[in-house]
Image: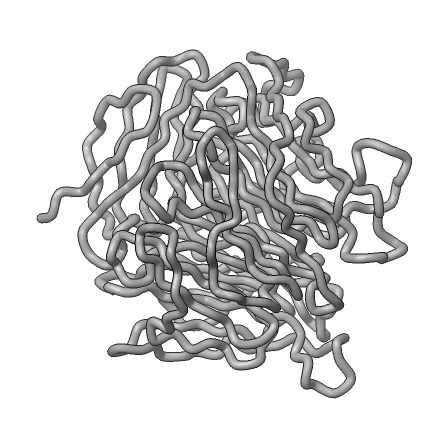
Length: 488
């Protein structure tokens, strides 16, 4: 593991700093169907390199906040959609304009983007899921496909007698079929709250990881992994470790330097950290500092409840840090009520809590989050949706802005090159990121890949494209760059 021997890691740069930004009021509210969810997506819907924010509102409408620049946001026109649990932004039809999938307690909604931040309801041939309570989503493009393969994770079957306990719904896999989609029911389901397509073992084919809420498990419930290549769930005989946790969210990023993704699975209690190996994942040592099992400020010593998690280099030193949105489900007495968000600074493989000094240790009931460069200054900013409390946005005002921001483009339906791997190297070493859509909790985006480069002023990058074609190393400077694949 890169840097894991540095057991007494010390800061190489100043700790990150954030300041709150005033934004129009938006609250994720509602009854028990909105105890979970509360997702948010960032989408540059007008092509000005300043991402907008689209936030689920539960019983309140979905809100689109137009990015006016310099961290100013204004409410923009948007179709009236309520009962929304989550929002994901991706290009569904290959026209180089992002569309939206809105997850709901009830029929899901897909919206087509027009490139000027206008969105209209459009089904794309995608089944709406009926009356399911949908709480998770991911997408990938299988080999040769023009349109994406989609996965929808559903929570409790509200029509089942005796619910909600023991009534986890099944999940849905959709593969392109003519002008529509062929449906595969993923059964059993264990109340999925996050799903993610990722090529975890680097064999060129994505698998689907499902993180499930143990609070509603039926007998034998656990985390799950579905193989697209084998068309079935993987088991212990396949080498899949299926821990049983109250799974809420998934963060995926190589933090060990082996070019395979490591994982954080948020939960009630431990935020389970799993490090990649040649044959799968194994539990990280507790000393890594990322388990964040209890509040780190205040006197509430009960276990924490983690929701959205994201690896992101907020101090641009070349190591991926970890943000976790925290908050009680509602009034669960066995869990912490004063439960601040975590911002865990990665210092050579050891994580150190800095959210209070950084200014983002909110005590609201956090749910979904976005970590993205919202003002195009080379630093990653932060937005968090809260249950029964206003949306919070923070601007990163840290000193370090040395970063490379990489956007991928390729011909065909998968215009953003979802499934690609990008390698960046400087004299300090190699960083590797996979471009995915999904994970987190109830919200996700396809954004430029952000690489902090510390004190360097340039780097080299290369792309392993989704079809396995390896690009050449090329020099890049600090700032945004688009790597376009030339058609064969």
